[in-house]
Length: 142
Image 1 (cartoon, rainbow, N blue to C red):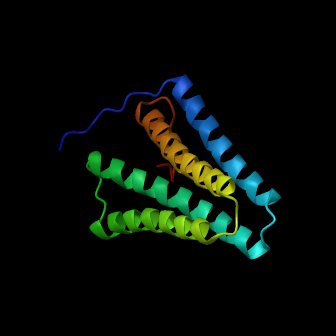
Image 2: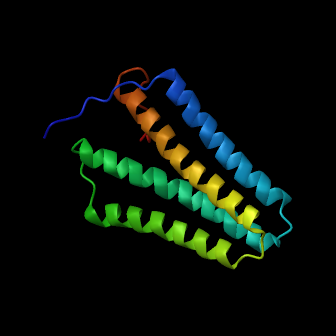
């Protein structure tokens, strides 16, 4: 199998990716902190963020592993997709039924999606940087 030689990401892209991740996560969490919802609702939305970030990064890693010829079982690959779709479904159902203003629902949805996208970009940058020899791969690195 042909291995794809990753190109080192530019500093601007790395910075923009980290900034987007921080803005998305901090904004989402600040919204939760200041929300007037019950603590169990806040816990639900916080758990969705943590689960969503993990699912998005895990799916990105699985896709990249397969692209580079690293074996990823179909079961794990399918679970990654199911997890990502499930977290998006749970967020959608939660926001649809929430007693929040439409602007608040949009705020949570957009900061959530920004966080997921940015987590994938940051993971890609970490992987590309490690693969290009600029950073020594560490145990447990993606």
